[in-house]
Image (cartoon, rainbow, N blue to C red; front, top):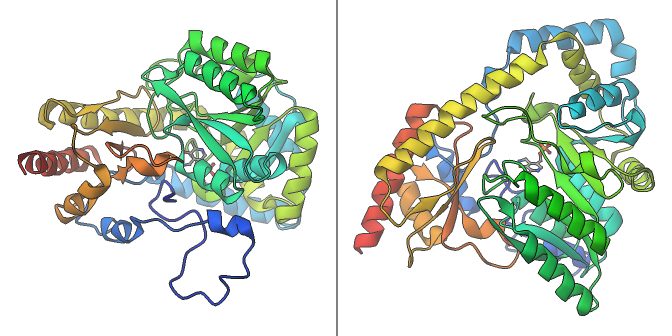
Length: 418
Ligand code: PMP
């Protein structure tokens, strides 16, 4: 399975052509494979290439001077604490602040429910580590986040995809899959879902379906892992109510400051029922002892002293403008049978090529025309997705996005003529 992260780098261990240790690795290391299209990503990062591939937040929009002052002030005032080991569960004050953030999505949490993690990526790793034995089943939307699939693969999980459409996961498909697996005697460890502004599909689970998904999972006793890094980045109105807001006992929620502040701090979190939380803390301690006190306190200081809600609005406006640039140029330039989703938040558009075209085969041609995207197969555990591609609008300026779409449309037109 391909393993690009959202940034076009690998998220798993690097394979090597001659490897003297090949017979000695643990079986799980076979699930850690390098990407087939990795070499192309090196080319895609050249300045002349418009990259619609990466998922990097536009951190340049942050008040960088203010962040610098805040960090200097932190060292001056609280250096001995900031530079010391911390607790495995995370800084207690930051955990309180996270509960305030969570209220915006309808979650009434207690600091005791929160485990601070190294980005939500580490929360994904820990949750997989505590639940998955080789061969265990995880349900996930098809397509799903490449970094999660990489983690699931590293722990040798069996991922079963659930169909989705423009309104998110299809409840009937979820219910049928659960029924079939239960009938076959395959226990399901959890449903992994990104309900809001999904990566890579850009779609959002609608309100009615949220209740259905919760009901289906509750009835079948299936734990839900709700991954919601983009939930605050909606372009219309208030953030959606999280799944966890309506079933705190059956949902582990994963959150992150990577998109609302900056990924460089690597601060994310999990909100979990207390039994699971205890295991997560133990797993956290065995992995890294404790998260960086320094970046936790820096994020805490930022939340306490800066207008962070305003900053999120700034990000939303910026991404909305880029989304508009992408959608309007796709509308203007793409051939009739090229289709795409219309995200109302987040970073990504999911596009479907005309019949007969293959996105992985198209990528080298696109890169030679100086535009890059991520082929759809990376977002499926089972080799699906060949006709799809993910186009991100989060990083390039609107004019570059328009230019990138123009180049991509040219490549597709040419391919259709062949
Ligand atoms: N989940 C999803 C759906 C993501 O898109 C990402 C980042 N691309 C992550 C988790 C991990 O983010 P982080 O570790 O920076 O919080």
